[in-house]
Length: 110
Image (cartoon, rainbow, N blue to C red; front, top):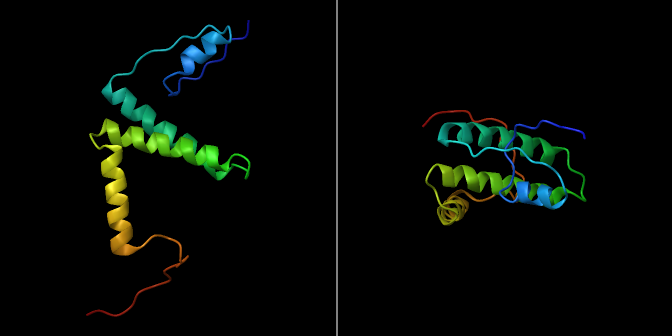
């Protein structure tokens, strides 16, 4: 039987899904500091997967990235509702990115 080592954060139901497929799964539940570290590693992993995703995987990778962002926020005591509220607040104050504006430079002083 092939044994592959991952040592990475996975979604909550992943161990059960693998067991249903007849796989033996070894995992641990992380403490706060290790969980925080692995969340940041997962964020980097998901950003890379998003960057390399073809159009057929784009939505799935965006969803995975958002899930990690929400997990990071929750781990730091911030709810999804607070994230969304702040996103809307910043969008209302400063706009989004729909106009595709690239700042080139700013000169002069007041």
